[in-house]
Image 1 (cartoon, one colour):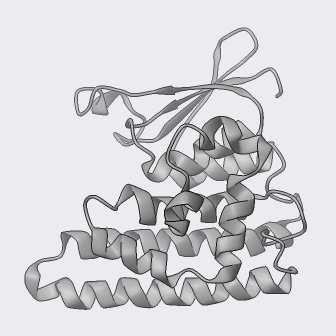
Image 2 (cartoon, helix red, strand yellow; image 1 turned 90 degrees about the horizontal axis):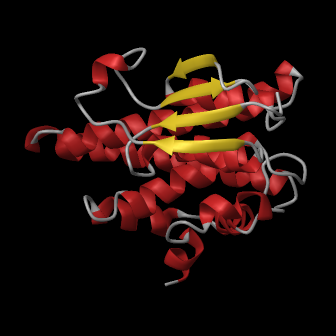
Length: 220
């Protein structure tokens, strides 16, 4: 598996592919970004969607093509040891990750809501965000507030949580500054610690150093 290389097809933006980029970087494998012409290349994708991950063998032959962001993430997390082999322990991480998907959907719903539905959809987003922050902060405290959800090493849910808040604070800032400010103001000391620890990880530096640092935005 260590001789595999990867191509990640996605737009030239962080978006929902940033966790995958960070996992590939942390795994220290050969990989490259590819930005398809869109929508011209939409019919060429497995489900007409991005991201898409292409895995190639040492002989440069395509071994695997998969779509759907969380499917890609979990494949890489399991393959490279960022999710435990024990299904019970893995499920504890995956439930936190799936809640982030729920909040992301609620974010998109409120962003696209008509005026008469806007307040209701924003309230739902706020409620899901509040519950996630409370639960995540408790989990981080229960683990000793060392900047990790489980143990003392970088895990899938550490990376996914960092990428989620980076998207909600930095990536959406220009389009919806009010949401960015809301999320920023909602972060607890425990989540500030996680963000700082993940962003400082040498295993992620090659990807993290390419863009604006979340720690810098939070301290501004």
